[in-house]
Amino acid sequence: LAQTVPGKKVCALSSGGVVLRSRKRDGRFLTALRHFASGDLIFKERPICICVRQGGASSLLKEANRVANDTHCRSKVEQLWDGGEPDSKDTSRGRDGCKSTAGEWMRRWFRILDLNSFAWGEKDVALFLAGSMFNHSCHPNARYEAGQEHGMFFATRPISPGEEVTIAYWTSLWGTTHRRQVELRKNYMFTCTCSLCLKPDSLRSIACPTP
Image 1 (cartoon, one colour):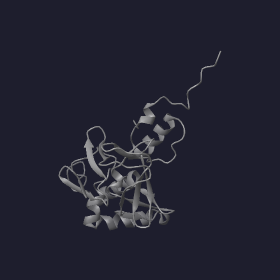
Image 2 (cartoon, helix red, strand yellow):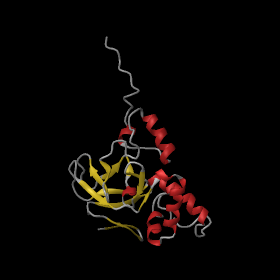
Image 3 (tube, helix red, strand yellow):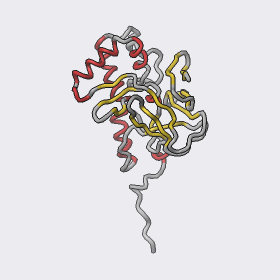
Image 4 (cartoon, one colour):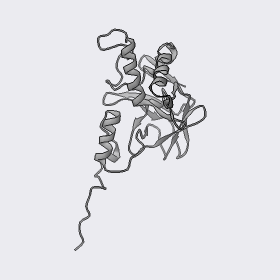
């Protein structure tokens, strides 16, 4: 099922259970088209590319050059968020409107990798097109799992049609709301407004003494 944003084909999912939408406040997001029970596979997706982190910077640069010269692969990578405005008009162009130079591509590549990569095996990371469209929640209703050939996304609790499907970008969600907000701003450049973050912080509350 081809999922689209206005004027662009985004990806083909192996399940027609979600659709890509967009809103001005926080850009693109995924919503459920049908009911999912806890544990259901929402969809699976082959990686755009896999980066071998154990090889250090040289391996990441090698993969960046390979993607830069692969028109099909690069067109997918350039649809991923690089820390700029959500849904920018043409992510292959620099701020002056010119096509990205090699240096600008490398800078964007590392920003995209930092903001969108998923664990793949023990030491590697992978980029997904549809998988990178999930918004974050500190109380998510979906989770990611790396398979042998696909990244798989499962429901962690019942999801209703029309409900936004979210994952947790940061695995260490314990601690106070303030701690989570600091880590998410530092690593992912946004302030979380999920249902958990909007609730009173129970870890900082003090019970009233009983008379």
